[in-house]
Amino acid sequence: MLILGIETSCDETGVALYDTLHGLLAHRLHSQMEMHAAYGGVVPELASRDHIRRLLPLLLATLGDARRNLGDIDCIAYTEGPGLGGALLSGASVAAGLGFALDIPVTGIHHLEGHLLSPLLADPKPSFPFIALLVSGGHTQLMQVDRVGSYALLGETVDDAAGEAFDKTATLLGLSYPGGPALARLAEQGNASRFRLPRPMLGSGDLNFSFSGLKTAALMLAKNHADSEFADIAAAFQDAVVEVLVKKSLAALSQTACTRLVVAGGVGANKMLRSQLTQHARARGYEVYYPPLDLCTDNGAMIAFAAALRMEHNILKTGARRDFNIRPRWDLQEYAGENQ
Ligand code: KG4
Ligand code: ZN
Image 1 (cartoon, rainbow, N blue to C red):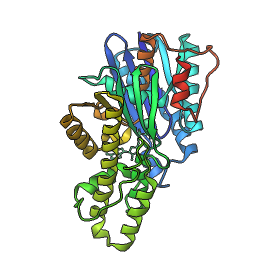
Image 2: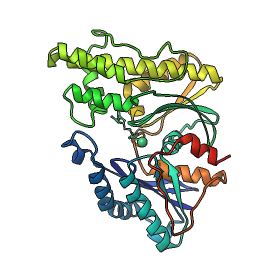
Image 3: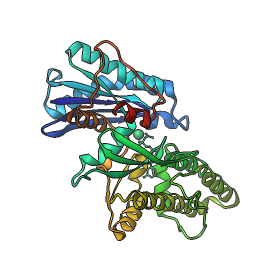
Image 4: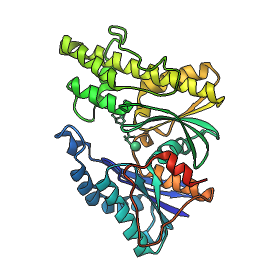
């Protein structure tokens, strides 16, 4: 069974072909980063228009990479939400149109399910149950995943997401959008012990996070120090975020008696987070799993793959051929509830 995955929830157009027998055949990505950089953030209307422009050429190129034709596709999976309304609509309408033309089923997938199942695309892959640390531009959550479709929220951010805090702090340090990776690069040149930033909610006794105060603390440091010291501020910021993410993840593992941790979402590409998590988790006998590096950020492969796993577990829903849906604010718990 050949599944086409389409991801257009934000500023990346992702297309992938996943074969349920042979695995991921090909995937392509177009990042709109450069286009949005001039505005310092994602401009939703520009994002939607660019998805429309890119989708079909990307699909044809991906088919070429996989040496397949349109007629070989058996099912289409697109990101139904959460995300930007217009951007989601671009992917949903292309999926629905193609599904109608090819007379094949179309299914909407939850973007975060795509992220948290993506480590199962790597080798070795985790077995269930596991704890998922989901750290993206829009979300910071700890989830307990007992099986495909069963996602229990253990804790989440009460304000900014970790990626959002990276991006906002990068902007105030004069780095261009999207700042997360740029801040991480700058931090590599800095001395992390020069400044000490707070570790928000570390002692809160729950598994929730808060990152907006950290950004303000970094701003105060930046105001009082010269540009030449910004690498040290970046390093202090990264250190604080990573320590909180690591300690809360370890707490989630110990509270649930799970032994496997899966890290997903864009911030999961952060080298320091990876090395600290791996080091501390291993020291306690836990295993940590990551998606392949190129599948950490948004992509179509995770959407096609989530659909394949849902199909395997008989929980894939396909809509009536001519209707399609988007859910810009779609809670993962609600989605998990639909699987009961
Ligand atoms: O999962 P993703 O591609 O998109 C969302 O669904 O949000 O995550 C993007 C986020 C951005 O905030 C970006 O700055 C952050 O992930 N990010 C990083 C790194 N690479 C991407 N943050 C810190 N270090 C990185 N290396
Ligand atoms: Zn994402």
